Length: 386
Image (cartoon, rainbow, N blue to C red; front, side, top):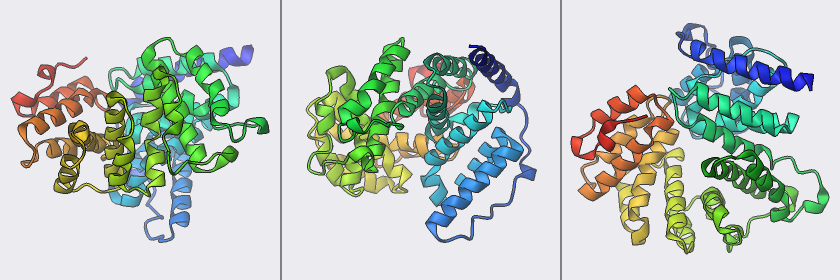
């Protein structure tokens, strides 16, 4: 249709323009003073943040909104622990502008706070248009136009596709039936994905959204406290990895963020590859919750079953990358991997993990410089990045 062609052309123009605008200097002097700082009640403070982000986006554009997010992250620990959710919200509101043909300038800052921007943007796009071709094209352009800045924009965008396909169930006949609720979304991921990696990222979005609506008790769904991973065990093998890694949040929910109990539940996963990746994902959340004591975490990791020992350490280091201050995420990650109490084997595993994924957050040049600053014996692939 004519409207679809216009929308597709608009996507191309906006994303092509993003390379230029993302390299322009930002004017931080005109950002609004944070009026939320003195508010004590959590619900009111959250509403204040949301209003402030929305006002900044509407008046100053996406770049200013990300600068504000960076400022709030640096000055308010409560905001920092919920940063991914606010990036989600920013993506949704940006889509509203996009759908009204209002200009915005996506930039490398869309990687902030675990790429939540793409998750929110793609959810809203699918809810509004149900256009898989448009979603695929947007992800492709995002990945291509930002490839010099990050290697993960397209993958994060596909995760958003999976998200957006689940959270708008209207047929009461599906309520209380988790497999029936997500199956159309899993089928959609199969149709929209032309590689196994894209399929994995898309299906992680599906299972992530399922965990969210289940934890919220929507659609007559509820967590099985005695076995929160039952649903993943019932999935076909090619979907188990995506399911287990996303249901870590459900495990944390039923244990009230007790990491020792959560690790015990994850240890019931029979497949080592799924169990260890899920355990790493669990420990990443220590950083989000502000539990960042190096020695305390190291003691916790060493007390786990042997298959979890190193994945626990690498997960903690990765947590600093995922939830650290924008553009400075690597600082605490490198610092932890350099911690004197780590054995050489532990340090080697730690550095291998964080150095191998730097391009998710940083340019080739910045990733190389971070790597070159590390002890040569721990450098990943001679610091050669694509």
